[in-house]
Length: 485
Image (cartoon, rainbow, N blue to C red):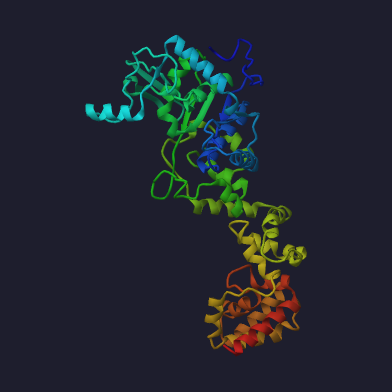
């Protein structure tokens, strides 16, 4: 029943040739957006394949037609490409291989490794309740000798005695008692193939040598091994089950509760370099404890043997820190290019954007943002008219007795000063000294008047980028407004 012949040619529509290195696979189900845990699994598989001269197979496990959507398939492919994780084969689609799964299921039935079952869920639950045992299938139909027919599922006959040991590259040997494993279903009562059958048949047909996936799959792995042996596939892949990702309360990350969608981080302006770098460190660390690593450095240093089996804390705050580090590593031209999609989507009119003004201010902004989406708020004062004011901040500052005088002095001084950051700084420092204020105290009303916000790029870089005429015009409006406060 094996799917790979003696020459290594993979059959059943999988046309690639098996090379000398390991063959790994990333096999997402398109039932939602890409989870950060799935992205980490894809990254680890990619790193092993690239480090060890192997091949990465992309397989879309799309047999659940009721929950899957084609746009989610496209989203998965797009995010993988964004992360820089290419694949060597695929994407293969399980939905095109239903007859292959049924063929293997029929062979398992004929060999006695599987049997048909007509039990309903209600009947199984009633028997469990009557016997006073936990819910679960009780092998009721194992010896009834049923053949295929309407409303009959096909179940695998798990050995009743002995143990199955999983040799895991991260956890060592993990042993399961066969008596504790249920006779799991291979085909639903409507003939649809189920996850484990599809998973094992695909891995055999695609000659997968290494299965690297989340630890939530570990309980399925003894069933995988028994099914693998029953279909006659050889040799068994090597397994590595990755540590669970948890939140700050040490709870497993939840799509409903935690920020886990990679697409959301991309939309917020996280860099793929930062995302890959951070995900790689969730459970693994290099020997030299270096934290900021490019993809080629990760490839050079990564090994599954250094992956820790303890749960890994996915910390959005630390991810944002990594993103800021990577933003500051960009050269100026690349930073501006990465900002373009966010600037194009900004609320100001398209013709209001001044590329030259943004270029002048970009270096100061680059040093201060944690995500690219924050750039819009940092530079919006350059392009929006009328200026959008933080009203709560203005109401507070307008009541300060020194505010009108500071604004008037700035208007007078800025009319003649050389329009560059350094002279503007000196002029403002002189205004602060004359008023008996610290520089930051004098800056606050000026910043609010010309940018509309109390937080942003350095005031003097902002003034230089805005230009004298617009800055003086905004100071005039602020002076008039302060006089009536």
